[in-house]
Length: 205
Image 1: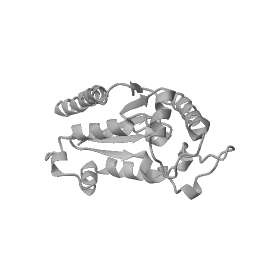
Image 2: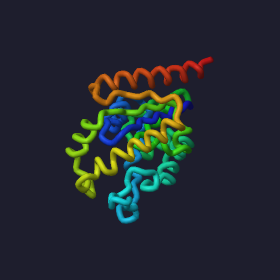
Image 3: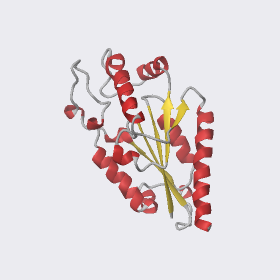
Image 4: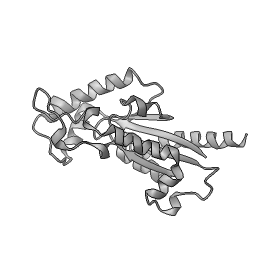
């Protein structure tokens, strides 16, 4: 059994979730773990000096819980898929010869060193400030963004987190989030498929 861990990161509303879901539907034996599922309760997320909730930092997330999920997949990806209740069509019958793919998506996945070290492939979605702000304003969050939150907290934290990421991460593929969903999927799917094929051929040698 071979495994491949793919990271899809990027800014808020950059298209990482859409790409990850599309990739999952194209690749057999794959599943997604999304970082947004591990936010701490709003009551324990601290405020910054401007009174904004500091969601855009690792301390706002249950990263220990997320890592346990990732480790559970790494121990037995076949069983993990079964436990997720995936349809049989997503799981090929030959356990020993297949490549299992974990897609991890989120805005800070490359900033958490223990997680970042597990990735075989890393993709980062980028969009300009004005596009990001427009997309963010069209989304409904719970709790909702207060006035000035994007300019005063979200974007500055993105720039900070990106700088931290770039100082520690190698082998990153940056993606233009303004390209069509189909074009982005095609490029990443081809890249991941080539790596899957490489792993399969390695098994035959």
